[in-house]
Picture: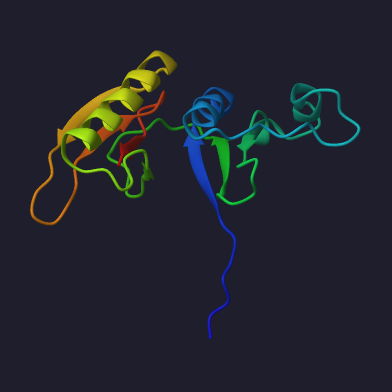
Length: 143
């Protein structure tokens, strides 16, 4: 029998702290305190090799959701994500009520730097969802 494992989702970024702040707001996650012995994350970063500096982490304060890790990479995003997050804001809702929940969340996220994408309306197999992009162009869905 397989063992259930914890996992984290890792984002490659140009500005890890900016992307982490965005996702904390989207998901209600929190940034952890800096490691013991360091007053700030910037103090800690100065102890790391340059390519590892300014990484960021955010986590579910309830401990239920996966940890998110944001690491600086030199290359920019050039193609569509092969994996994306579905932010479940319309669970259990259908029709106009679901669309209203998706639109309300979209309106909350745009001032944070999100970009609205295509609204996919319900069909015989799927409920409506709204494609979005985060502050660095990573795709995600409001579902």
